[in-house]
Length: 341
Image (cartoon, rainbow, N blue to C red; front, side, top):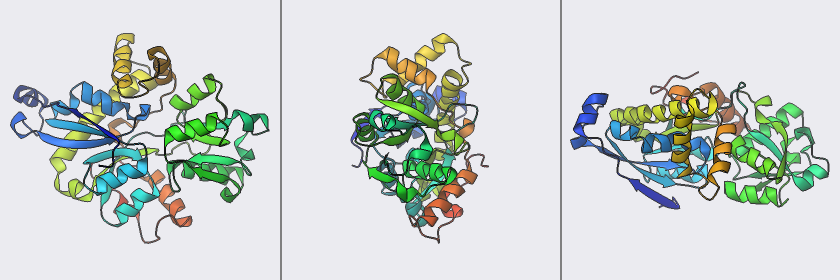
């Protein structure tokens, strides 16, 4: 299996719970689904929905399958190892969509001009050598997981606005987010862009310097999306709608506590404890609470999807030769599940 670990959580709804929530599934017909996840705060709604029984309320039994890269998760959905995935848009995902294997069915993490977004970081050594602004990236190294990843795309947006050729920056593909953290902290790469829950901690620990914010370059960037196989999107509508309803409840809890700050202290503390079971488990609870409460980006309410941003990403990938010119947005997206814009 492509995931590096899995967790089985039995979260079957009772017949009474199913009746009270109006779910399409009763306990006798509970559906087992496998959901791909990353151990990042942006996946918090998944853990909230699981631990609070929102999936159970919909009659779903969920098995989490953890990955270290977006590309591997996309392959997992296409190959049938996963029913659903939540991760960034990549060239690999688009190429799988072209083959008719996967469909994007919703949006998740997004840049929002009203909320602090992804950090543009420089290593200490690079900063001391003069890398104090993103416009100074030419001639430097930049951490990515793979070519065609969200990190590659974000670098391209910086280059376009600051007027330099992306080829002037040496990308270092390191496969895993954790590997990039280590490379930046040790000065093996000069720069990176990452969500603030990680970026703020690196700055606070003295491991890197913030030299800009990505929202200045793309304030409406759809960072991550929800996807499934084309077959599931077309033929398992009731299950998919139930899955999205449950996940949406987790999103609402997350945004209220960590983005809009409308939840009370007890609610916020409870959600911190839930998420910390899955994310940064080796980090002290107080440190993690600070990361989550001060470094969370908005996740789209109702899992709405910016097809405008997806089109921009597709256009760029085609221009770079990362995907074929014959793929279009209709191949990538099933817009029938959530609101799109």
